[in-house]
Image (tube, rainbow over all chains, first blue to last red; front, top):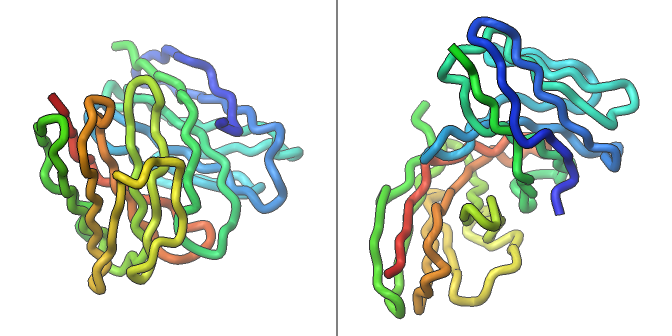
Length: 113
Length: 113
């Protein structure tokens, strides 16, 4: 079972900030929060990840609450190309490699022109 | 840097046949993992290889197998194909550090008739 809960779908106007929430209330101390997105017929694309501090890169910002039970992915200026399914995943620090990520249903973000 | 490359992009096979899918990881990545994605079950972990050894395995029957070569390229094989094996098969690679993100290819779309 997925360890995260996300809304099924969200709309956002083009040019506005898209804020995608994720609940991970059972997250452990050594688990990171990762965000991926998937555009139809393509593989999931890595966006950003973090442990407890807020993170920012060229694609997005990740805000993690102080108790680490929830997080928000922020796309600062959404474009039509940001329409995709966004997955929030928790993954332990495993010492290396992939240990079987569990993807939930994700949030279908639709950017409206 | 080139991304994860999967071949072929599309494949149509008949029930009972076997199929081999190929994955070339990002240069320098030694961990390669495989996932099956279907509309009903979502993304499910098949197995992970590191340094030519299977390190983790998901809950799939023995008809699904894989291997990794010394150059980190990986193949997965499905024998005695069933209609339910129709899916998007995704390969992901990562650097072998505990919080390294997975980077996915665009997958092989397998249709079993």
